[in-house]
Length: 150
Length: 152
Image 1 (cartoon, rainbow over the protein chains, first blue to last red):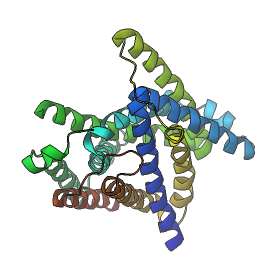
Image 2: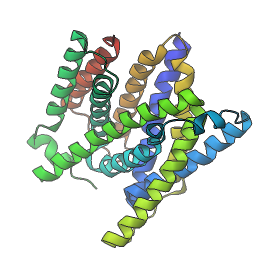
Image 3: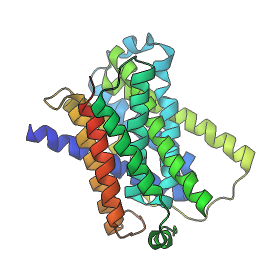
Image 4: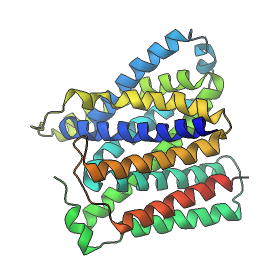
């Protein structure tokens, strides 16, 4: 169990590392350029991993519905948006706002597209996240000075 | 200033929405193939889409070429990004299940963010952590755990 927890936390650290590298690249190449390089390098690495695994699953993917193919489009927009704000907001604030958007949209997808119902605990969770977003964006003179980029 | 800050926040929040949509879409593809294969396709399509958007942006806006250069390691963001898919597939199929995987991944992301801001590594502007960051982290992480655990 501890190993799996360690791997999951490590995964979160890797996501943070990936975002920071892309954010740094965006300063020189722009947010869209960073998104392009992120996907190209990731594609190369995954192609190697897939080739080592034999790549038998390709046929099943071809039959997948159209909405299953939109992930790459959304991924390109995600990396670009993330890289754009990282240097402006700082890492921790970017991460917390992205998580908020991700979790609330995830619930909306479950609720609207998959017909799931919302449990009371989940409503409390939504309220806590929204409160967090409001607190994060409240203007405060002490922090406004620090937030100037560069 | 206020408008700029609000826009940044909305873009970050919107990035999270793109991510949720990407995960939902990609998991459909993974059901038909495997986590690695679906991520491979998503990365390939993502590279093409980013390139098209980049070309469109250059034609429409004709931006000044920035005088900043990036060190070589800044191009490697795709490597930890690609490993993320593989690791998530391993932990989601273990005792943590998907919900536990998501929760601990969020914890790891916030830990990295705090360390990066505090120490200012990888060219990130060093920034003191404020009490407010801890309050926001508690609310967002706590709320996320409630969302995940409360799912029926």
